[in-house]
Image 1 (spheres, rainbow, N blue to C red):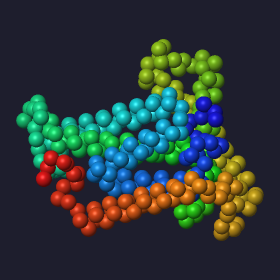
Image 2 (image 1 turned 90 degrees about the horizontal axis):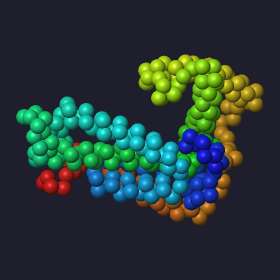
Image 3 (image 1 turned 135 degrees about the vertical axis):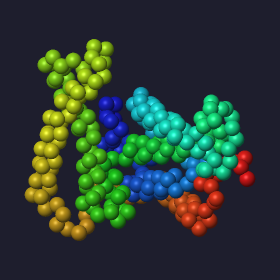
Length: 285
């Protein structure tokens, strides 16, 4: 695999998750995402959070890039939680049903154990969702994703849009890097040690303009090529990237059906047996 790729595989790998069919990968991903979105119970979130990290580690990704993106997500998540606390310091009272003060800055700005518990649950929920998404991106190719979406009864024209967009991420990254080097050779200074952040932002905007123009040109060429080849004439289509189910797919089918049952149970429980408070807290009766 190309170490410079931006989290996008163009060829399938040789690990367990890589060898699964696109149908298995897409269905497992969708079930897990819906499950984590539907629940605020740490007893459900924590096991899937751990499972997502086990799956990501099994792929042996480029950890330098993973930690960079993960650090950004963590910082933004913590900043979001801080803003919630600034607006409503005692948010845990409405979400957990109790307010146990741990520290008091003023009469308004306090820190409660219930608010911290809610922040932890929310942090694990969002980070787990991101880790599952990152694992999915790391183990699937654009063609496999299109085939997997098509197996879920998504129109194949929509599947093709996702596939092309997914496939173009490395190309856009490579073009951006090439344009940046070209402009640096013409005297534009983009070194963080020599220019201010605002100056670098303005100069990067100048890079994006030709990049957007060339991207539109490519989209037009692809659309013309697909029209000339009669794309969209038939109601159905097949995908060369989708292979027959192997032993791993049969095992994962049992697993994602179990996940599906848990997802249905969680949704039904939230709809028909809603609790008085949204987040379960172990020390609040």
